[in-house]
Amino acid sequence: MAATTDERCSRGCWAPRPEMNPRRLLTHLGLLCGAGGLVLQFCLSIPAYLAAGRDLPGALGTFFAYYTILTNIVLVLIYLSEIVPARGLDLFRLPQLRGMMAACITLVGLYVYFVLRYLTALDGLFLVADNLLHYVCPLLYLMWWLAGVRHGQMRWSQLPVMLVPTLIYFAYVMARGVWVQEYPYPILNAVKLGYAGVLLNAAGMTLALAGLLALVIGLDQLIARQQGGAHD
Image 1: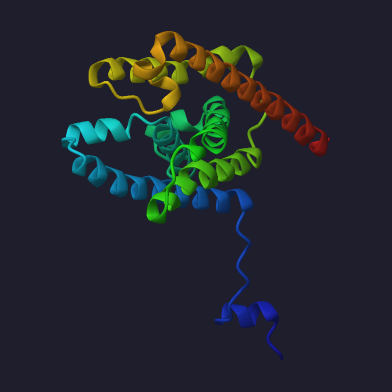
Image 2: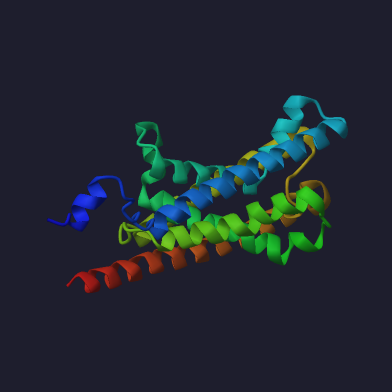
């Protein structure tokens, strides 16, 4: 009697592999690009800071003063929280934090595209790292967030709270600037602009972030309604 297909496969033939879930693919791709971009930027920036006369604590302080670096670190931790079931990463599984980061990383990409890219000419690996952290990682994260399965948990009342981490960052870099007379971004340079100019710029960026957060919350609720309708 001829063997059935299942019997033949049980004897050693290869069964077709299931297709990878698009969200899982984006998770691994986002983690790879985010971690790779951060490591590359670190390996390029720290030696450059040291060569310019900074000591190691000063070089590290400068590197971690950039909003781009901090936001991309959070994205990497969010991706890790999807892969590693560690309780220490629970914070990064919160839908509210993940939605907030969609707005924050969008602000990073928009600011660099419309402002910073005209101020500095980069090439070589510096350009690769810049493109990864400012364009590739934001786009990957937005796609990853939109493909999420836990939409509908963000509330309009949470918007002011979502501004707090960025306001804390602003307070930190301004306090650090008083100490070291160095600011990570031109719009925060109190030496050249004065504090009135910096506060005006900060107010504008806060309004921009609030608008992006409002857009994210609206999208979150819209997607949740569409998902609910699809399940009915």
